[in-house]
Amino acid sequence: MISFLKDVLLKFQQGKIDLDEALKLLEDYPYQDLNFAKIDHHRELRKGLPEIIFGQGKTAAQIKKIAKEIKAKKTNLLITRLNLSTYEEIRKEIPALQYHPVAKIAYLKITEPVPGKGTIAVVTAGTTDIPIAEEAALTCEFLGNQVLKIYDVGVAGLHRLLGEYSKLRSARVVITVAGMEGALPSVIAGLIKAPIIACPTSVGYGASFKGLAALLAMLNSCPGGVGVVNIDNGFGAGYLASLINHLG
Image 1: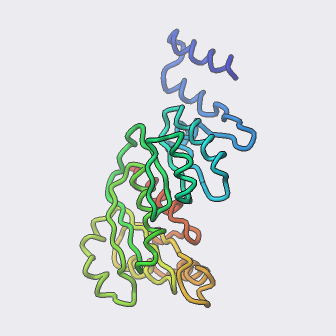
Image 2 (image 1 turned 180 degrees about the vertical axis):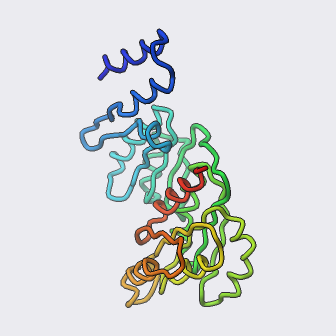
């Protein structure tokens, strides 16, 4: 693959191919094999967004090695589902790494991302949904988006939501984060034209089945324009919202 890379670069240097053709040829440039992980350094080239590290289930040593290699390529670094003790261990090797204790995300911006077209609103039904909402919001911000946070406006008091109506209407994309019966995205989708990304949370009592009740309610939403991510997947909601907000 080194010879292939040299050939592409040489052709570009000699003017035989232009920059766009060279980038196209490099889209499938191989990953870096660490045996326990294969780092896709060129994901940003193919998709416009870098590879993100899912921290849960990985050892501190594994995350540290992956993070160091990503940083070495001068790529922005985001680690989700990371506990504080693991972050502190990684920070010994990467002192500039920042940590958000509520979202449980570590991040390091080396270059500024392409800005989104508008504002992404992140809305929660309750205060207990905030950790997942913060994961979504920080992901959006990391990927170059302006974020508006509207918290604790669930259906137990709809007047609170209506008080934020003008702000909701100004958003280009809305992420709704709710547990319990999961009604919030349907309510908001009936009020505004922006696409709704519904993120169910595992918040609730016994028959909520750790978020399954909210997930099924959101999948059965009556108003059009509601897409649903997995339970507690704030990162997935933020990533999708960013993709939408960069369109056009």
